[in-house]
Every structure is written in C-alpha cells, then in structure tokens.
Image (cartoon, rainbow, N blue to C red; front, side):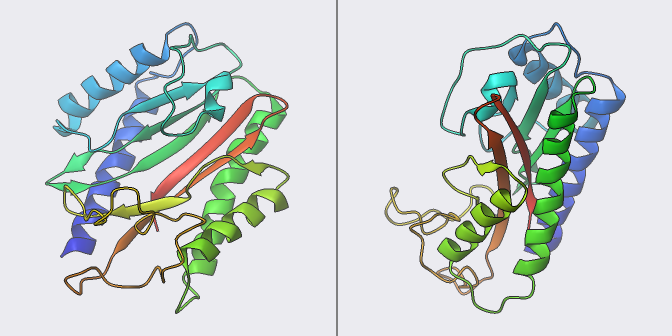
Length: 222
C-alpha cells in the first residue's frame, strides 16, 4: 500500500510540473519568489495540494549552485537562464519529492547540463536495481563518480533520503545521516525500518559547473 501511495503522490506531482509548463509559468522577468507563489496557487487550484512537507524551491542562474539548506537572495529570472524547481507535495497524506531543471533560451552548455543530470539519474537507478546490498555511502560515491563521468561536479551534501507517509520516519539522533544518502551513512540502504517495513528512497542529483555558475537538478522516487 505504501508503495502505491508514494507512486500516486509522485504521479500527481509530475502532472503538476506538466501543468507548470502548459501554463507557461517559467518566463523571464519574474522573480523566483513570484514563480514559487504561482506554482503553489496552481497546485492548490488544479490538484488540491494544500501542504508541502519541505520548503518549496525555485532557483535560477547562480542560485542553482546553492544546496538545500541555503536561502540565497530572491533573483529575477533572466531570458537565457537555467533554473530548477524542487517541490515536496503531500498527496493523500503521502510525500512526493520532485525536482526538475528548465532552460530558457538555447545555451548549449545549459541544455547539456539539464539533459545529463536526467540521464544520469536513470543510469544510477538501473545500477541501484541490480544491487542486493548497498551502503548509502557507496551509493553517494557512485553518484559523485557519475557526475564526473559526465564532466560535472556533484553539488549536493546528500544524494537523497527516505520518504513515506507524512511525516516520514526520523532518526533517533536528529544529527544522524542514517536516513540520507550521505557519505557518512554506512548502513545498508535495503535495511527495513524499526517496524520491519521497507524503506522508500528519493534519489536527488545536483550537477554543477562552479566556474560558469550553473547547476542542474533532477529528483524523484528511486
């Protein structure tokens, strides 16, 4: 049941991203905060999504280098920008976590970054599905390696985390990385939770080019 609910939450969230595109919300001249607000309005109006389990993120240009805990200054979206959107909608009490990258204009390097981070996500998923035992730290290092293979740097502190029924399982120690795909989490990612239930993981990729001040992002359920 949990798996089906999480897939449904993700599918609804993917529909939200399609609606964002169909309504042409991502345009130059508006601020990140304005786009964020318009997305929330659309989510409520079209999909009845009232709550999000983590902060809603729209980041463009140099702000695409920022990691999740950061709160960079609100920025005006430019005509040739790269930007990403990271949302955590709650659908029927279950969590989704979706991240997508968009490119305004025809800059070849930005388009390549967008395409690479998405392609890498699916390649990592395919590799992950072949494993029967895998430390979270090993998965993190594989992600870092994959970014380098594509000619980018991995920009995140983590490469994912668990999701579930809201609010999802929390570690006994709030500072512990045991429920994140983190370089210091040496637990098997296939371990069940404290109640013996399967855990469900989000894989989040942030590839960056610090020299040119751009980042790409792709995130969803593994």
